Image 1 (tube, rainbow, N blue to C red):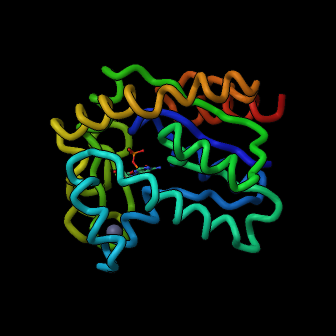
Image 2: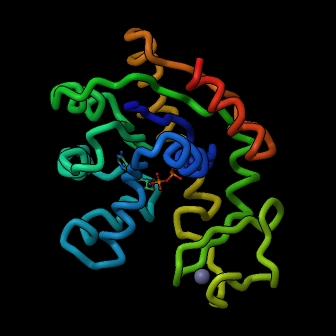
Length: 210
Ligand code: ADP
Ligand code: ZN
């Protein structure tokens, strides 16, 4: 199965991608994670991408298209994959078609902006191991400290409130047009994100098995 996950930042794409990839034994490919790794490693790509990411803007199409083109060559992608956070613009979707990739389904996880703003303001991550928490929905055992490695939790720069607003604005202007793009191709399915992650997962799996 070749699947694209669409949804606003903070809609829970990453969490659902993890569940789906285990269920179907296919890799989940996140351009956001690839870019963050490049930033952490201080590669040339990472240095170029960092400013855009910190401001909540999109990284230029050529960069992410390059990441995906290379990643999809991987042996583990032969039986399918989940794209989490790609494509995010119409030119990225066109590039995917030009690569000859035949997508089976595009699943949008829909969550209203107000809900997203509330969720993202509580998000905390561990700078050491990457574990993520939420002050309200998924608190660490000890406040402000990672359960797994004991490091002090931080707010990702792009989760700061002004940046969240900018990411939502970018989502509506640049990424939302992809719904029409894939609807025209008969590939789009929309699932409403629920308060409980497990409830969303149930709807997602039902949509994929239908
Ligand atoms: P979220 O889904 O929470 O916005 P991601 O982890 O998917 O976050 O992405 C983080 C950042 O990486 C984005 O705000 C953007 O700057 C960059 N990015 C990720 N994927 C893409 C993409 N397909 N095109 C352009 N920029 C991207
Ligand atoms: Zn940790």
